[in-house]
Length: 524
Image (cartoon, rainbow, N blue to C red; front, side, top):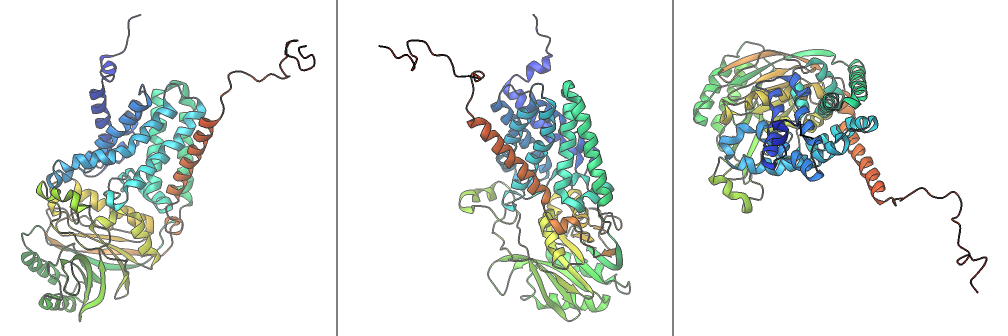
Protein backbone atom coordinates (compact mmCIF):
# COMPACT_ATOMS: atom_id res chain seq x y z
CA UNK A 1 0.00 0.00 0.00
CA UNK A 2 1.41 3.37 -1.00
CA UNK A 3 2.27 5.69 1.85
CA UNK A 4 0.00 8.72 2.25
CA UNK A 5 2.41 10.65 4.45
CA UNK A 6 3.03 14.25 3.46
CA UNK A 7 6.33 15.41 2.06
CA UNK A 8 6.83 17.46 5.23
CA UNK A 9 6.38 14.33 7.32
CA UNK A 10 8.94 12.50 5.23
CA UNK A 11 11.30 15.46 5.58
CA UNK A 12 11.13 15.12 9.37
CA UNK A 13 12.47 11.59 9.03
CA UNK A 14 15.83 13.12 8.07
CA UNK A 15 18.01 14.01 11.08
CA UNK A 16 19.15 17.50 10.11
CA UNK A 17 15.81 18.89 8.88
CA UNK A 18 14.14 17.46 11.99
CA UNK A 19 16.74 19.09 14.25
CA UNK A 20 16.18 22.41 12.48
CA UNK A 21 12.42 22.07 12.91
CA UNK A 22 12.91 21.37 16.63
CA UNK A 23 15.11 24.46 17.02
CA UNK A 24 12.52 26.62 15.27
CA UNK A 25 9.74 25.16 17.40
CA UNK A 26 11.74 25.87 20.54
CA UNK A 27 12.27 29.49 19.45
CA UNK A 28 8.55 30.25 19.06
CA UNK A 29 7.90 31.31 22.69
CA UNK A 30 10.16 34.36 22.24
CA UNK A 31 7.20 36.13 20.62
CA UNK A 32 5.40 36.07 23.97
CA UNK A 33 8.18 38.10 25.63
CA UNK A 34 8.67 41.84 25.18
CA UNK A 35 9.10 43.56 22.80
CA UNK A 36 6.40 41.66 20.83
CA UNK A 37 4.76 40.86 24.21
CA UNK A 38 2.13 38.53 22.71
CA UNK A 39 1.37 37.12 26.17
CA UNK A 40 -1.49 34.93 24.92
CA UNK A 41 0.86 33.19 22.47
CA UNK A 42 2.72 31.61 25.40
CA UNK A 43 -0.24 29.26 25.91
CA UNK A 44 0.15 27.70 22.44
CA UNK A 45 3.82 28.32 21.63
CA UNK A 46 5.03 24.94 22.92
CA UNK A 47 2.47 22.87 21.01
CA UNK A 48 4.59 22.38 17.84
CA UNK A 49 7.61 21.37 19.93
CA UNK A 50 5.54 18.90 21.95
CA UNK A 51 3.91 17.51 18.79
CA UNK A 52 7.34 16.93 17.26
CA UNK A 53 8.90 15.24 20.29
CA UNK A 54 5.92 12.93 20.86
CA UNK A 55 6.31 11.50 17.34
CA UNK A 56 10.02 10.78 17.71
CA UNK A 57 10.72 7.25 16.42
CA UNK A 58 13.16 6.49 19.24
CA UNK A 59 13.92 7.73 22.74
CA UNK A 60 17.29 8.99 21.52
CA UNK A 61 15.58 11.07 18.83
CA UNK A 62 13.11 12.47 21.39
CA UNK A 63 16.01 13.57 23.60
CA UNK A 64 17.63 15.22 20.58
CA UNK A 65 14.35 17.00 19.77
CA UNK A 66 14.34 18.32 23.33
CA UNK A 67 17.96 19.42 23.09
CA UNK A 68 17.56 21.18 19.73
CA UNK A 69 14.38 22.87 20.91
CA UNK A 70 16.18 24.05 24.03
CA UNK A 71 18.99 25.45 21.90
CA UNK A 72 16.48 27.34 19.77
CA UNK A 73 14.72 28.67 22.87
CA UNK A 74 17.94 29.92 24.49
CA UNK A 75 19.22 31.59 21.32
CA UNK A 76 15.88 33.28 20.66
CA UNK A 77 15.35 34.58 24.20
CA UNK A 78 18.96 35.83 24.44
CA UNK A 79 19.46 36.86 20.80
CA UNK A 80 20.20 40.45 21.84
CA UNK A 81 23.49 39.21 23.35
CA UNK A 82 24.80 38.29 19.90
CA UNK A 83 26.71 41.59 19.37
CA UNK A 84 28.47 41.08 22.71
CA UNK A 85 29.14 37.33 22.73
CA UNK A 86 29.21 36.61 18.98
CA UNK A 87 29.56 32.88 18.26
CA UNK A 88 29.94 32.21 21.97
CA UNK A 89 26.17 32.56 22.42
CA UNK A 90 25.61 29.43 20.32
CA UNK A 91 28.02 27.44 22.44
CA UNK A 92 26.26 28.57 25.63
CA UNK A 93 22.86 27.83 24.11
CA UNK A 94 23.99 24.36 23.04
CA UNK A 95 25.21 23.58 26.56
CA UNK A 96 22.09 24.89 28.29
CA UNK A 97 19.80 23.46 25.61
CA UNK A 98 20.84 19.99 26.77
CA UNK A 99 18.75 20.60 29.90
CA UNK A 100 15.65 20.03 27.77
CA UNK A 101 16.80 16.62 26.51
CA UNK A 102 15.10 14.78 29.43
CA UNK A 103 12.00 16.88 28.84
CA UNK A 104 11.86 15.63 25.24
CA UNK A 105 12.18 12.05 26.52
CA UNK A 106 9.28 12.57 28.92
CA UNK A 107 7.12 14.04 26.16
CA UNK A 108 7.57 10.86 24.14
CA UNK A 109 7.19 8.65 27.22
CA UNK A 110 3.80 10.11 28.18
CA UNK A 111 2.35 11.34 24.89
CA UNK A 112 3.91 9.04 22.29
CA UNK A 113 1.64 6.83 20.21
CA UNK A 114 -1.92 6.82 21.51
CA UNK A 115 -1.63 7.59 25.21
CA UNK A 116 -4.24 6.22 27.56
CA UNK A 117 -6.33 8.69 29.56
CA UNK A 118 -4.18 7.90 32.60
CA UNK A 119 -0.98 8.71 30.69
CA UNK A 120 -2.50 11.93 29.33
CA UNK A 121 -3.50 13.03 32.83
CA UNK A 122 -0.04 12.17 34.15
CA UNK A 123 1.56 14.21 31.37
CA UNK A 124 -0.27 17.31 32.60
CA UNK A 125 1.54 16.95 35.91
CA UNK A 126 4.91 15.52 34.87
CA UNK A 127 5.75 17.69 31.85
CA UNK A 128 5.18 21.07 33.58
CA UNK A 129 7.13 19.74 36.58
CA UNK A 130 10.03 18.77 34.32
CA UNK A 131 9.95 22.22 32.71
CA UNK A 132 10.17 23.84 36.15
CA UNK A 133 13.16 21.61 36.95
CA UNK A 134 14.89 22.96 33.83
CA UNK A 135 14.11 26.55 34.85
CA UNK A 136 15.40 25.83 38.35
CA UNK A 137 18.75 24.52 37.10
CA UNK A 138 19.36 27.31 34.63
CA UNK A 139 18.31 29.89 37.25
CA UNK A 140 21.65 29.41 38.93
CA UNK A 141 23.43 32.68 38.26
CA UNK A 142 26.55 30.86 37.04
CA UNK A 143 24.49 29.43 34.16
CA UNK A 144 23.02 32.77 33.16
CA UNK A 145 20.23 33.20 35.69
CA UNK A 146 16.44 33.04 35.32
CA UNK A 147 16.15 35.33 32.30
CA UNK A 148 13.40 34.12 29.98
CA UNK A 149 11.34 32.08 32.45
CA UNK A 150 8.17 31.16 30.58
CA UNK A 151 5.91 32.51 33.33
CA UNK A 152 7.45 35.97 32.97
CA UNK A 153 5.56 36.39 29.67
CA UNK A 154 2.46 37.08 31.80
CA UNK A 155 3.81 40.28 33.39
CA UNK A 156 1.01 42.48 32.03
CA UNK A 157 -1.93 40.14 32.73
CA UNK A 158 -3.81 41.11 35.90
CA UNK A 159 -5.10 37.65 36.86
CA UNK A 160 -1.65 36.13 36.26
CA UNK A 161 -0.07 38.74 38.55
CA UNK A 162 -2.52 37.70 41.26
CA UNK A 163 -1.35 34.10 40.82
CA UNK A 164 2.27 35.28 41.02
CA UNK A 165 1.52 36.53 44.53
CA UNK A 166 0.57 32.93 45.40
CA UNK A 167 3.39 30.94 43.82
CA UNK A 168 5.69 33.40 42.09
CA UNK A 169 6.73 33.22 38.47
CA UNK A 170 7.19 29.45 39.01
CA UNK A 171 3.44 28.93 39.30
CA UNK A 172 2.87 30.89 36.10
CA UNK A 173 5.42 28.76 34.23
CA UNK A 174 3.72 25.59 35.45
CA UNK A 175 0.33 26.88 34.34
CA UNK A 176 1.55 27.94 30.88
CA UNK A 177 3.20 24.58 30.19
CA UNK A 178 0.18 22.64 31.48
CA UNK A 179 -2.12 24.49 29.07
CA UNK A 180 0.29 23.81 26.19
CA UNK A 181 0.37 20.09 27.03
CA UNK A 182 -3.43 19.88 27.19
CA UNK A 183 -3.78 21.66 23.83
CA UNK A 184 -1.17 19.38 22.25
CA UNK A 185 -3.12 16.34 23.42
CA UNK A 186 -6.39 17.88 22.24
CA UNK A 187 -4.99 18.50 18.76
CA UNK A 188 -2.72 15.49 18.25
CA UNK A 189 -4.41 12.63 20.11
CA UNK A 190 -8.12 12.36 19.25
CA UNK A 191 -8.56 9.35 21.54
CA UNK A 192 -7.48 11.42 24.56
CA UNK A 193 -9.52 14.53 23.90
CA UNK A 194 -11.83 13.91 26.82
CA UNK A 195 -9.05 13.94 29.44
CA UNK A 196 -7.47 16.91 27.65
CA UNK A 197 -10.67 18.94 27.88
CA UNK A 198 -11.19 17.78 31.46
CA UNK A 199 -7.67 18.86 32.31
CA UNK A 200 -8.16 22.29 30.77
CA UNK A 201 -11.35 22.72 32.78
CA UNK A 202 -9.62 21.52 35.95
CA UNK A 203 -6.72 23.93 35.35
CA UNK A 204 -9.15 26.79 34.80
CA UNK A 205 -11.04 25.90 37.98
CA UNK A 206 -7.88 25.61 40.06
CA UNK A 207 -6.43 28.89 38.83
CA UNK A 208 -9.78 30.63 39.33
CA UNK A 209 -9.90 29.36 42.90
CA UNK A 210 -6.32 30.51 43.54
CA UNK A 211 -7.16 33.89 42.02
CA UNK A 212 -10.22 34.28 44.23
CA UNK A 213 -8.34 33.14 47.35
CA UNK A 214 -5.19 35.21 46.83
CA UNK A 215 -5.19 38.25 49.12
CA UNK A 216 -5.20 41.60 47.39
CA UNK A 217 -2.55 44.20 48.11
CA UNK A 218 -4.16 46.65 50.55
CA UNK A 219 -2.74 50.10 49.91
CA UNK A 220 -1.94 51.78 53.23
CA UNK A 221 0.11 54.77 52.13
CA UNK A 222 1.80 56.56 49.27
CA UNK A 223 5.23 57.94 48.50
CA UNK A 224 6.73 60.08 45.75
CA UNK A 225 9.80 58.63 44.05
CA UNK A 226 11.68 60.23 41.18
CA UNK A 227 13.61 58.33 38.51
CA UNK A 228 16.49 60.12 36.81
CA UNK A 229 17.26 58.72 33.34
CA UNK A 230 20.07 60.69 31.64
CA UNK A 231 20.15 58.86 28.30
CA UNK A 232 23.12 57.72 26.24
CA UNK A 233 26.41 59.47 27.03
CA UNK A 234 29.97 58.51 26.06
CA UNK A 235 31.70 59.01 29.40
CA UNK A 236 30.97 59.13 33.14
CA UNK A 237 31.69 62.87 33.42
CA UNK A 238 29.14 63.86 30.76
CA UNK A 239 26.59 61.44 32.22
CA UNK A 240 27.09 62.81 35.73
CA UNK A 241 26.59 66.38 34.50
CA UNK A 242 23.30 65.40 32.87
CA UNK A 243 22.16 63.58 36.01
CA UNK A 244 22.94 66.69 38.07
CA UNK A 245 20.94 68.91 35.72
CA UNK A 246 17.93 66.57 35.71
CA UNK A 247 17.99 66.16 39.49
CA UNK A 248 17.93 69.93 40.04
CA UNK A 249 14.62 70.01 38.17
CA UNK A 250 13.10 68.03 41.08
CA UNK A 251 13.56 70.84 43.59
CA UNK A 252 10.26 71.90 45.14
CA UNK A 253 8.35 68.84 43.86
CA UNK A 254 7.95 67.18 47.27
CA UNK A 255 9.92 64.05 46.40
CA UNK A 256 10.74 61.45 49.08
CA UNK A 257 13.48 59.58 47.19
CA UNK A 258 15.46 60.02 43.97
CA UNK A 259 16.89 56.99 42.16
CA UNK A 260 19.70 57.03 39.61
CA UNK A 261 20.48 54.08 37.36
CA UNK A 262 23.24 51.47 37.38
CA UNK A 263 26.79 52.83 36.93
CA UNK A 264 25.43 56.36 37.30
CA UNK A 265 28.65 57.30 39.14
CA UNK A 266 31.86 56.13 37.49
CA UNK A 267 34.27 56.88 40.35
CA UNK A 268 34.56 55.64 43.90
CA UNK A 269 33.24 58.35 46.21
CA UNK A 270 36.17 57.81 48.57
CA UNK A 271 38.54 58.78 45.79
CA UNK A 272 36.29 61.60 44.55
CA UNK A 273 34.86 63.42 47.57
CA UNK A 274 33.91 66.27 45.22
CA UNK A 275 31.29 63.98 43.63
CA UNK A 276 29.94 63.01 47.05
CA UNK A 277 29.64 66.70 47.98
CA UNK A 278 27.89 67.49 44.70
CA UNK A 279 25.29 64.75 45.24
CA UNK A 280 24.79 65.81 48.88
CA UNK A 281 24.12 69.36 47.65
CA UNK A 282 21.47 67.96 45.29
CA UNK A 283 19.92 66.12 48.23
CA UNK A 284 19.69 69.37 50.21
CA UNK A 285 18.28 71.22 47.20
CA UNK A 286 15.56 68.64 46.48
CA UNK A 287 14.87 67.63 50.09
CA UNK A 288 15.26 63.92 49.26
CA UNK A 289 17.87 61.22 49.69
CA UNK A 290 19.46 60.04 46.44
CA UNK A 291 20.28 56.40 45.66
CA UNK A 292 23.17 56.29 43.20
CA UNK A 293 25.10 53.37 41.78
CA UNK A 294 28.90 53.32 41.77
CA UNK A 295 30.80 51.14 39.29
CA UNK A 296 34.45 51.59 40.17
CA UNK A 297 37.52 50.26 41.90
CA UNK A 298 37.00 50.77 45.61
CA UNK A 299 39.37 52.89 47.66
CA UNK A 300 38.85 50.93 50.89
CA UNK A 301 39.43 47.42 49.54
CA UNK A 302 40.89 45.82 46.40
CA UNK A 303 38.80 45.17 43.31
CA UNK A 304 35.97 46.65 41.24
CA UNK A 305 32.47 46.60 42.73
CA UNK A 306 29.02 47.65 41.58
CA UNK A 307 27.38 49.25 44.58
CA UNK A 308 24.14 51.00 45.50
CA UNK A 309 25.04 53.95 47.74
CA UNK A 310 22.53 56.15 49.58
CA UNK A 311 23.45 59.82 49.88
CA UNK A 312 21.64 62.32 52.08
CA UNK A 313 22.03 66.07 52.69
CA UNK A 314 25.15 65.43 54.80
CA UNK A 315 26.79 63.04 52.33
CA UNK A 316 26.86 59.23 52.16
CA UNK A 317 24.63 57.79 54.91
CA UNK A 318 26.78 54.67 55.31
CA UNK A 319 24.16 52.45 53.64
CA UNK A 320 25.80 50.52 50.83
CA UNK A 321 24.90 47.38 48.92
CA UNK A 322 27.49 45.56 46.80
CA UNK A 323 26.06 43.52 43.94
CA UNK A 324 26.02 39.81 44.82
CA UNK A 325 24.96 38.07 41.61
CA UNK A 326 27.13 39.06 38.69
CA UNK A 327 26.41 38.62 34.99
CA UNK A 328 28.47 35.75 33.53
CA UNK A 329 30.88 37.07 30.88
CA UNK A 330 29.48 40.60 31.23
CA UNK A 331 30.88 41.20 34.73
CA UNK A 332 33.09 38.18 35.22
CA UNK A 333 34.26 35.20 33.19
CA UNK A 334 33.56 31.78 34.70
CA UNK A 335 36.74 29.71 34.84
CA UNK A 336 38.71 32.60 33.36
CA UNK A 337 41.85 30.47 32.99
CA UNK A 338 39.89 28.23 30.61
CA UNK A 339 37.44 30.65 29.00
CA UNK A 340 39.40 33.90 29.08
CA UNK A 341 39.64 33.82 25.30
CA UNK A 342 36.02 35.07 25.25
CA UNK A 343 37.37 38.61 25.70
CA UNK A 344 38.90 38.39 22.21
CA UNK A 345 35.65 37.56 20.41
CA UNK A 346 33.13 39.75 22.23
CA UNK A 347 32.59 42.37 24.92
CA UNK A 348 33.30 40.04 27.82
CA UNK A 349 34.63 41.47 31.08
CA UNK A 350 38.31 42.29 30.91
CA UNK A 351 38.50 42.10 34.72
CA UNK A 352 36.18 40.28 37.10
CA UNK A 353 33.98 42.37 39.38
CA UNK A 354 33.90 41.44 43.07
CA UNK A 355 30.76 40.19 44.80
CA UNK A 356 28.96 41.49 47.84
CA UNK A 357 28.17 39.16 50.70
CA UNK A 358 24.61 40.01 51.79
CA UNK A 359 21.47 41.89 50.84
CA UNK A 360 20.83 45.23 52.52
CA UNK A 361 17.67 47.12 53.47
CA UNK A 362 18.38 50.86 53.70
CA UNK A 363 16.44 53.62 55.42
CA UNK A 364 15.74 56.72 53.34
CA UNK A 365 13.64 59.07 55.45
CA UNK A 366 10.45 57.20 56.36
CA UNK A 367 11.06 54.55 53.67
CA UNK A 368 12.87 51.24 53.99
CA UNK A 369 14.25 50.43 50.56
CA UNK A 370 15.66 47.21 49.15
CA UNK A 371 18.10 47.73 46.26
CA UNK A 372 18.80 45.23 43.49
CA UNK A 373 21.30 45.83 40.72
CA UNK A 374 20.53 45.04 37.07
CA UNK A 375 20.54 41.25 36.49
CA UNK A 376 19.43 40.65 40.09
CA UNK A 377 15.87 41.78 39.37
CA UNK A 378 15.40 38.53 37.44
CA UNK A 379 15.77 36.46 40.64
CA UNK A 380 12.46 35.94 42.50
CA UNK A 381 14.16 34.95 45.75
CA UNK A 382 16.08 38.22 46.09
CA UNK A 383 12.96 40.37 46.13
CA UNK A 384 11.29 37.94 48.52
CA UNK A 385 14.20 38.09 50.97
CA UNK A 386 14.26 41.90 50.93
CA UNK A 387 10.54 41.89 51.69
CA UNK A 388 11.07 39.48 54.57
CA UNK A 389 13.75 41.86 55.86
CA UNK A 390 11.27 44.73 56.00
CA UNK A 391 11.62 46.60 52.69
CA UNK A 392 8.74 48.96 51.85
CA UNK A 393 9.91 49.46 48.26
CA UNK A 394 12.08 47.36 45.93
CA UNK A 395 14.51 49.32 43.76
CA UNK A 396 16.22 48.00 40.66
CA UNK A 397 19.12 49.99 39.18
CA UNK A 398 20.00 48.95 35.66
CA UNK A 399 21.88 49.89 32.51
CA UNK A 400 21.10 48.28 29.15
CA UNK A 401 22.71 50.85 26.85
CA UNK A 402 24.80 48.12 25.18
CA UNK A 403 21.51 46.62 23.95
CA UNK A 404 19.68 49.88 23.30
CA UNK A 405 18.01 48.90 20.03
CA UNK A 406 17.07 45.35 20.99
CA UNK A 407 14.27 43.70 22.95
CA UNK A 408 16.39 43.62 26.12
CA UNK A 409 15.31 46.95 27.71
CA UNK A 410 11.60 46.07 27.49
CA UNK A 411 12.19 42.53 28.75
CA UNK A 412 14.19 43.81 31.70
CA UNK A 413 11.62 46.43 32.66
CA UNK A 414 8.83 43.85 32.60
CA UNK A 415 10.51 41.74 35.29
CA UNK A 416 9.84 44.41 37.92
CA UNK A 417 6.09 43.86 37.53
CA UNK A 418 6.50 40.23 38.56
CA UNK A 419 8.75 41.05 41.53
CA UNK A 420 6.17 43.59 42.72
CA UNK A 421 3.27 41.16 42.39
CA UNK A 422 5.20 38.33 44.08
CA UNK A 423 6.10 40.39 47.11
CA UNK A 424 3.18 42.81 47.43
CA UNK A 425 5.70 45.68 47.38
CA UNK A 426 6.01 48.41 44.75
CA UNK A 427 9.10 48.24 42.60
CA UNK A 428 11.04 50.97 40.85
CA UNK A 429 13.17 50.02 37.84
CA UNK A 430 15.56 52.91 37.14
CA UNK A 431 17.93 52.80 34.19
CA UNK A 432 20.50 55.03 32.54
CA UNK A 433 19.07 54.83 29.04
CA UNK A 434 15.62 53.20 29.33
CA UNK A 435 13.35 51.46 29.77
CA UNK A 436 12.60 52.78 33.29
CA UNK A 437 9.33 51.76 34.94
CA UNK A 438 7.46 51.77 38.26
CA UNK A 439 4.89 49.21 39.41
CA UNK A 440 2.52 49.17 42.34
CA UNK A 441 2.28 46.38 44.93
CA UNK A 442 -0.13 44.44 42.68
CA UNK A 443 2.29 44.52 39.73
CA UNK A 444 0.25 47.09 37.78
CA UNK A 445 1.99 50.10 36.27
CA UNK A 446 2.17 53.13 38.54
CA UNK A 447 2.86 55.48 35.65
CA UNK A 448 4.20 55.54 32.09
CA UNK A 449 7.46 53.93 31.06
CA UNK A 450 10.48 56.06 30.23
CA UNK A 451 11.50 54.69 26.86
CA UNK A 452 14.95 54.34 25.36
CA UNK A 453 14.65 57.74 23.68
CA UNK A 454 13.94 59.64 26.91
CA UNK A 455 16.36 61.81 28.90
CA UNK A 456 14.37 63.18 31.82
CA UNK A 457 13.51 63.05 35.51
CA UNK A 458 10.01 61.77 36.23
CA UNK A 459 8.16 61.72 39.54
CA UNK A 460 5.93 58.74 40.32
CA UNK A 461 3.18 58.64 42.93
CA UNK A 462 3.78 55.15 44.30
CA UNK A 463 1.21 53.22 46.40
CA UNK A 464 2.54 51.34 49.42
CA UNK A 465 1.31 48.08 50.93
CA UNK A 466 2.61 45.96 53.80
CA UNK A 467 0.67 42.70 53.70
CA UNK A 468 2.42 39.35 53.35
CA UNK A 469 1.74 37.47 50.10
CA UNK A 470 1.55 33.65 50.06
CA UNK A 471 4.69 33.62 47.93
CA UNK A 472 6.67 35.56 50.53
CA UNK A 473 5.30 33.35 53.31
CA UNK A 474 5.72 29.95 51.62
CA UNK A 475 8.49 30.58 49.13
CA UNK A 476 9.11 28.50 46.01
CA UNK A 477 6.54 25.83 46.82
CA UNK A 478 5.67 25.14 43.13
CA UNK A 479 9.30 24.13 42.58
CA UNK A 480 9.25 21.85 45.61
CA UNK A 481 6.03 20.27 44.36
CA UNK A 482 7.52 19.77 40.90
CA UNK A 483 10.61 18.08 42.34
CA UNK A 484 8.37 15.82 44.43
CA UNK A 485 6.43 14.81 41.30
CA UNK A 486 9.67 13.97 39.51
CA UNK A 487 10.96 12.05 42.53
CA UNK A 488 7.79 9.95 42.63
CA UNK A 489 8.12 9.36 38.89
CA UNK A 490 11.72 8.25 39.33
CA UNK A 491 10.80 5.79 42.09
CA UNK A 492 7.89 4.43 40.07
CA UNK A 493 9.99 3.95 36.97
CA UNK A 494 12.75 2.34 39.02
CA UNK A 495 10.37 -0.13 40.62
CA UNK A 496 8.93 -0.97 37.22
CA UNK A 497 12.38 -1.49 35.72
CA UNK A 498 13.49 -3.91 38.44
CA UNK A 499 10.22 -5.79 38.83
CA UNK A 500 10.61 -9.42 37.62
CA UNK A 501 8.85 -9.97 34.35
CA UNK A 502 6.35 -12.78 34.13
CA UNK A 503 6.18 -14.84 30.98
CA UNK A 504 2.68 -16.05 31.71
CA UNK A 505 0.06 -16.32 34.43
CA UNK A 506 1.03 -18.17 37.59
CA UNK A 507 -0.76 -21.53 38.03
CA UNK A 508 -3.43 -21.66 40.72
CA UNK A 509 -2.20 -25.08 41.97
CA UNK A 510 1.24 -26.72 41.87
CA UNK A 511 2.10 -28.06 38.46
CA UNK A 512 1.55 -31.84 38.10
CA UNK A 513 4.68 -33.99 38.12
CA UNK A 514 5.32 -37.03 35.96
CA UNK A 515 5.41 -40.45 37.58
CA UNK A 516 9.13 -40.68 36.92
CA UNK A 517 9.86 -37.38 38.66
CA UNK A 518 7.28 -37.58 41.41
CA UNK A 519 8.69 -37.42 44.94
CA UNK A 520 5.82 -39.65 46.07
CA UNK A 521 6.91 -42.39 43.70
CA UNK A 522 10.66 -42.17 43.34
CA UNK A 523 12.42 -44.00 40.58
CA UNK A 524 13.59 -47.37 41.72
